[in-house]
Length: 173
Image 1 (spheres, rainbow, N blue to C red):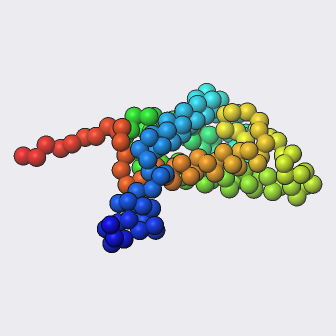
Image 2: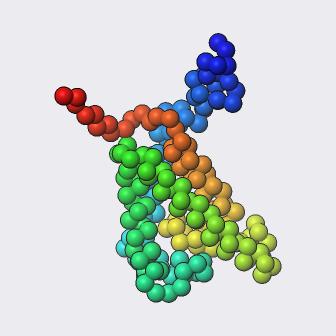
Image 3: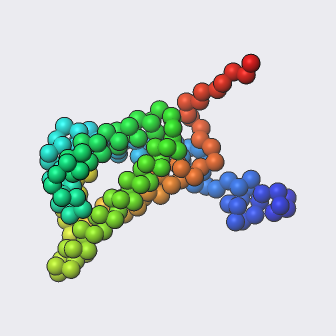
């Protein structure tokens, strides 16, 4: 086989496949992300005022309508993305939204962490409730988790195809 047939190392191996696009690994990513975001959404949906306070703690949005709209809408977006991944419907759309959310989570958590470090707290000792619905955790751990979620979302978005999905085929006339 020559490289012109799609086996170049840059293409990721045979026919452009790459280990991260293994259909079973992608399914595991889908189910893991779905479980995480469905659980997180359910934890926040019933308590929008408390979630608004947690969002406000990041110093990104001040009290007012934008904050409360975000506190109400964000959990429903997470829930919809989670259900989409479980059902195998609009996987790339859900993955794209999760890419944006996880990137945003990484930025605001990093910003809050930098604030603690600048106040003299050692990085490995920073411990707070990020507002994600899973309780207090170390900032370094949350940053690693969100980076992993971002990588999984990127893999789902970039995958050339997905298996175990709902497929609507149109009948040709």
